[in-house]
Length: 378
Image 1 (cartoon, helix red, strand yellow):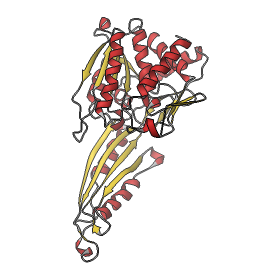
Image 2: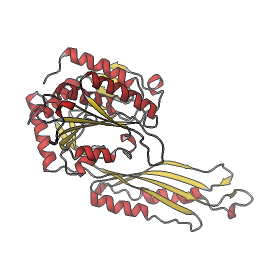
Image 3: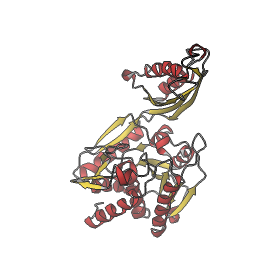
Image 4: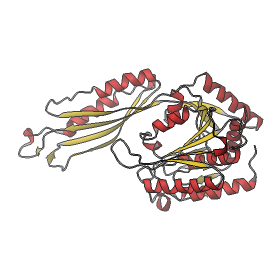
């Protein structure tokens, strides 16, 4: 199903409107502003919306609403197609005005969250609006607000919606060269806290027990768990601690990211991290966290979806490749349930989570054709 020049122009105009509403996960009011705009457009298209509100992260902070869109005229118990997207981004408010403005350079269009994944959300939304009455299976679209922090409040909803689907299409950004994703590593997130004994660093240094020193031991132990040959990476990405240069630190903490290739390795690494012991017996060590995204492994169902995508692309005169990646997405949840899942079906782009985030304008018609045919073809 080819995209007309007029449809492309309209897509770009609407995308600019969506990108202009900055939606970091930690600003639920801005996430909901964009959500309300999407629901208004959905209503204009004759679609219905379910709103799931009152969401919180693992520390109790408020999150934006999750939204399910569907055609009320095609409600049934038949398993259909789930389009899966997220509208939260990593960029703080003000990024658009200062460090990553909307701009066009050749075939590239830049903006915060444009690739990851507002262009993909808009693509999925337009496919739903255009094809909700034409697709061979009923379509539901789930838009979540917390993907960038591991989907702590949306996982259950994702799994509920995936259970209603024959297959799941995730519109994370496509890879340069027209790549899609057929496998992802599992992801774990851990919080390390050290509680020592404060003291003046000059006159009473020996009386103190440094939480920072203990944390340093733990950081080295964690980083040493990385084993690239097994597909395991452990990254201490955030650290905090101390109150002054002349104080033996009472508190120190770190946030740790774990990536694993499969469930068995995830179980092993989860146990290793949660059973860390303090080097200094006078410092209290607390380790919290878990695997928050199971591994996403290419199986027969996913292979069949890849082959379907390749056939569609070949008919469109496009080369397509699939890959497995270390980055996680909400597709991990549906794939781990055994529901065939194809990921990175959004607009091709790069630089996600950086100040060079962009999409390739020329890929919009290509990805429109791919996603529409995945929905239309039996």
